[in-house]
Amino acid sequence: MLKNQKAHATVPVTDLAKAKAYYVGVLGFDDVEAENQDAVMIKAADGTRFALYATPNTQRGGHTQLGFAVDDIEAEVADLKARGVVFQEYDMPGLKTVNGITGTAEARAAWFIDPDGNTIGLVQLG
Image 1 (cartoon, rainbow, N blue to C red):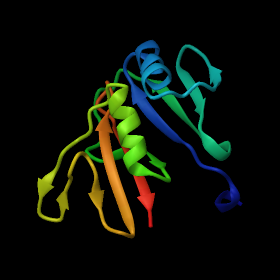
Image 2: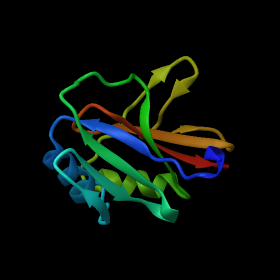
Image 3: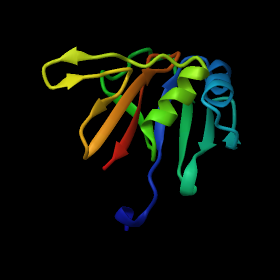
C-alpha cells in the first residue's frame, strides 16, 4: 500500500547545475543517488531523498517546498548561516522569528529561500 512507502519531494529549478552546486556545495549534501539531464536525486538521512527537477516553469509556491526535521535547530541554523544561507525573518500576527527561528516548546521552525525561490524549512519537534 502507498501509505507504507517512503515519500520524496521534487524541487523545481531553472538551472540544474547551479541548483546542484547550491545543494551540494552550500547546504552540504554529498550523496547524489542518480542524475540525468533533467533531474538530480539527492539522498538525505534514513533512506529519504529529494529530487531537483529542471523546468522552465518559474512559478513557485508561497509555502515550504521542502522540509527537514532537525534535532537542534539553533545548531543547524548557525551552521547554514556560516555557509552563507540567509534565513527569513517574519514579524506578523501568529508568526515572529528571532534570529531566523520561531516556535514553542512543541515545535520550532526556520525558513530560507534557495536560489530558485523555493522555500526550504527546518523544524525541530518538542
